[in-house]
Every structure is written in C-alpha cells, then in structure tokens.
Length: 87
Image (tube, rainbow, N blue to C red; front, side, top):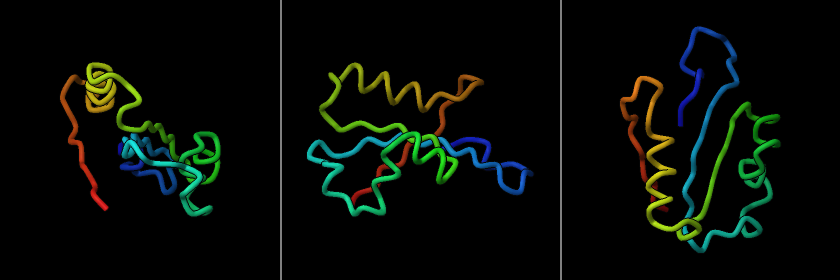
C-alpha cells in the first residue's frame, strides 16, 4: 500500500494497493460489501484507491517475482516493504 495518502492534503484520495490473493480465492465468495475493493474503477470511485490484484498461481513464478518487484520498487530505486497477512 502506498500513494500520496501520506501528505498534507486533508483528503488526498490516493492510495495504491497491490494484492496477491490465495490461489483458491473467489471474488463471488466475498461478502458483497468487500467486492468493491476488487473492482478497480469502483474502488477508485468509492475509496480513492487504485487496487490491483491477482491470485497466486495466475502467473508463472518469474512473472510473479517481476510483479512484486515492480510494486515494491519506489521511484528512487529503493524498495518498500511487503507485508503478508494471513487469515
């Protein structure tokens, strides 16, 4: 999670989120009130968040590493942390 939400703006509405869901994750099994988070345009409109997500196993291992590396790399080339949340 990153974006300009850490700013002096009172309501910056700019949060970027990259989610890697479990391989057996099914959007249709989510509670209705959570589904908006997984629909990019709806999440942007409702929460001011750009949400990008995929399931484990959707990409070959090398592409998954590239995906995570891209999201982890800041503009100055340094790395931001990645947090894994287990249910």
